[in-house]
Length: 77
View (cartoon, one colour):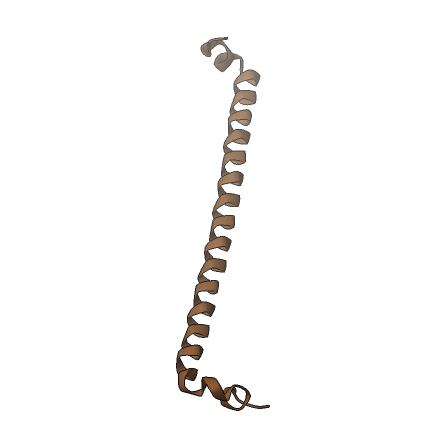
């Protein structure tokens, strides 16, 4: 396996800068992937939370309809 200076002798003078740029690009890509994963997780959590709120409201509505005392105390629309 040859190293960078053997394959590209004309870039030997700036080899350090090229390595640093590759590392910075790798870090930027890693941050982008982490941000996208975080956004997907946050969005999924919000979706499931909103579905849970709807289910809780439906359960409350059914409990009110099943209880004769509560049914009289809730106005009909």
